[in-house]
Length: 230
Image 1 (tube, rainbow, N blue to C red):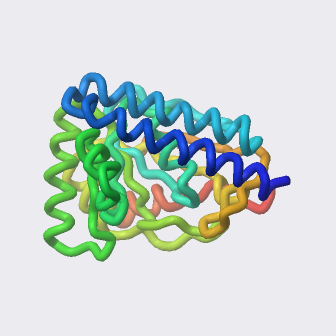
Image 2: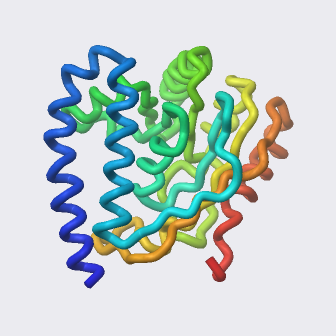
């Protein structure tokens, strides 16, 4: 049943995303229209996950009401899209490979996404900081996955250097986000499983802390749902 649900989900979501992306091209020249359009696409994805895969979303904690740096756990593609629907027009730092997807990558840049080379070169970091400045100045939240990549549920690799650079440069408070999407939406599996995914917004971490303290607090908070009971 899970395999069949996953097949139907893929056919419906990706099949309809193609015309959605094509229709977005003329809309993309007007950012005021593009942002709610992308928000609607994120809600369409949530509908597909709920009714085609049987995945419910449980949100814990307070959603950030101001522009902040959001530091989220990354276990699947699910939360990448879910955060667009939950946050107020977030600018998400994503891997450069996604921005290279024909048409979709151009639209992602028009929306304000920040592609970055995960190798962490100096040039890539400068480009990320420049784009993040523009997001901060516009009042939009900036979201980053501080562990750098998707990891299986229960694993907690160290925070990558890009988080510290962004945290220090932007001078914004951090809202850590823990989640357990990888239990139902495994990183390298076509099959998704029915159940409830929890996304937990943690207590705000103030700006300007020493690097080691900021990284330690973020790392602990985003891994708060790694317990076997979840």
